Image (cartoon, rainbow, N blue to C red):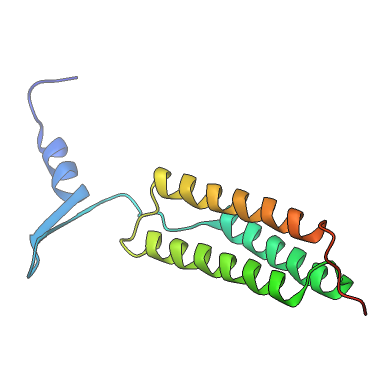
Length: 120
């Protein structure tokens, strides 16, 4: 690494980071794409919704149980949207969402296999 900065180094540094003052705070954008994609979480939400729907159709879930599970899924969706709101879903936010999905998955399993059944 050279201690002397060349014109190419300066132009790269200037083009990779753009900063300006916004009305409330300074805004900086780097040359890196911001990542708000959550494909694994999205897929998992779809699978869990399908598990809930299957439990309702088979009679394994009562109306109250399915409503509670749906409410939990809605909270996870709201948390996901909140994580995406700033333009970046951080590693910690992803971990929190995965944990919430893990808890929801266990709850679906428990509710589907408890003694409460809906007689068709």
